[in-house]
Image (cartoon, rainbow, N blue to C red):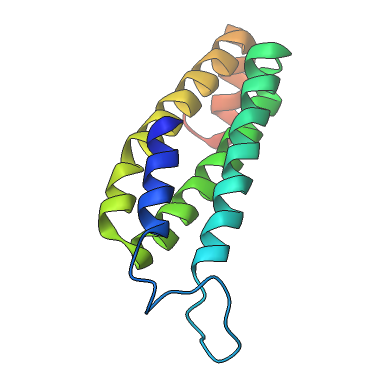
Amino acid sequence: RWIQIFAVAKAFSTDPQNYRWCSAENDRIVIPKLMKQYLFQLALGDEWQRVFLGEKRVGLGIVVVIGYFIALVWMVFTAFTLDGGSAAMLIPSVLAAIISGGINVMLFWNRLGTRSQKKALEAIGWA
């Protein structure tokens, strides 16, 4: 989480002549959008932790971690428009979301049981 805070702070410290917090005539108001995206992905990350680790609802955790991953990638692209270095600092967070999502899917798959797994594979045509 600290690296995300540093990355967003780095993006906020970009050239103030080009990027403003608000301006009526400037169409490149990216900083408030980045702040909203940061808070949105932060909320989804905390929600995934509560659902997956706290409540142990693995199926719902998959849905939340997919939303978290999409919000995080969206934020990385917005940060890249401000500062490439801050976007690069967010790449470990994206990798952590991929690993967390993979663990979540593996646990869900292992909880299905072998007969349910076979039915699921037959349903999608992989068996």
